[in-house]
Figure 1 (cartoon, rainbow over the protein chains, first blue to last red):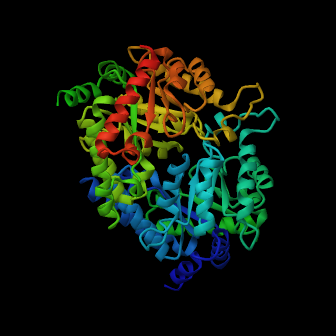
Figure 2: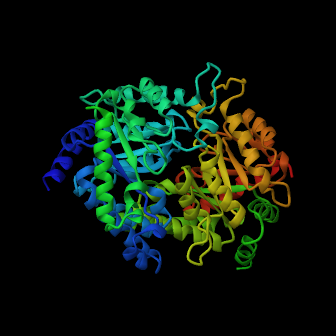
Figure 3: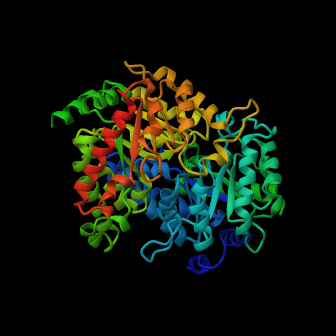
Length: 309
Length: 309
């Protein structure tokens, strides 16, 4: 409860990167565990119920998320909820999402909603309200949201406003970890730069008015760990952004690949691992919670050492 | 009920653009009404309940959507649900979304889910499952989904798969209608083209294997009506794509501005209008349903004439 009170009290005042940095330094971990609950991959004790119907699946997913949160809380600073997997279960899934967000917050974790949202004007405002703003006297669902910038600055502005008014954070997609990222993000502009470098410049501009006390911005960037050279280039282009680095683990990147992301401080990058942690039990003899805890602890140590702080 | 049966029966066999073309020609309208339900803008008879709490707001939104569907069904081919406004009400909002989708389908309308989703691999698969695939013996929530292509071809592939297997449609964001669209979409590439023209080329490639009987593809494009010159250029770059054209009405474009979008057939473009239809009662003496019906009918006539078929 001390942790909960701490996070809860600071939420209204401290900027997202400052809350993050405090937690990273206190817990000595830069790990974010991704909650990507797929019904077909749940532990057998939960899957049996989940196949009965959508409401049962929603409840099983909520229990799975709670179990993972309990298991990994000592080793991670945040959980990242992949909204798609909850959305696939309709309103029952969204109930599970709300439950998991609240539960993670009570466990003292920061919450990142991974929705990659992006839309114009009043629609982007509605997404900001859905995830980053207090609702009916309850705290916001999440501390930060992933944002797709393809629609331009005015589509990002409502999220920047949530950063200003509600101490939220965002992570803009800059250079993602998938093979197809090159199709658009790596296109060469007329000045010779790849497109993602231009997006990185926009992210830096958007973040300039939103610096926390430690010089990190509320406007972060998603940079795939699978392209180590790009991680270094991205760091030079966005010195004040917190990086959210997917791709370590199941997608093949190693902690050493992301070391250069941490040059702006121990909390200047977060390493996200989803499947390799939450489904660790599938290649282990251990209980699903114990397997997730062990993998999160192992990853936290490795990344902390690689980051060099 | 004849209409419902018709749409239901064809859904399993006819490609999305063929179902669309049949409906456009039968009803002589290319209008899509956007359901963007904002609690603060609801008619007074619904707003009174909506302010009581989130569950009540969800029910009020569902009733608003049903009322609009009833009012505009004779004059439109589809409704486009702006998911953000439902998401902002959490699981109660998603229940309202599910209700509105089913109700619109029963009224014989096609359903476009406007989520601008885009993510990698298994996550994109989950979004496709959420919106475009049958669930628990029920039909898919929507006939088509808007998709953000910034993550590249592999992020779009799960949606293409839903087009192949479930006769779904998608509308990829190509050149949006907002002022900030120029920040990224209009960047000049090394070969002199704007970025959006490259995305248009990808959309054409993705759609080549997904042509319906009338030569229109299941892979459509969102092209803002607010830039008439771009509409013509987009048509030349994507001759087989169905265009979804936002921006007519509240955003300032006129039916004449979009005439050149229709050169590939009467169903080769859809004109979306949201606020100017569903909130027409706010600048009228009429009942909210009657005001929406009148505005949809007026717009349908104007666009049909401008399209010239």
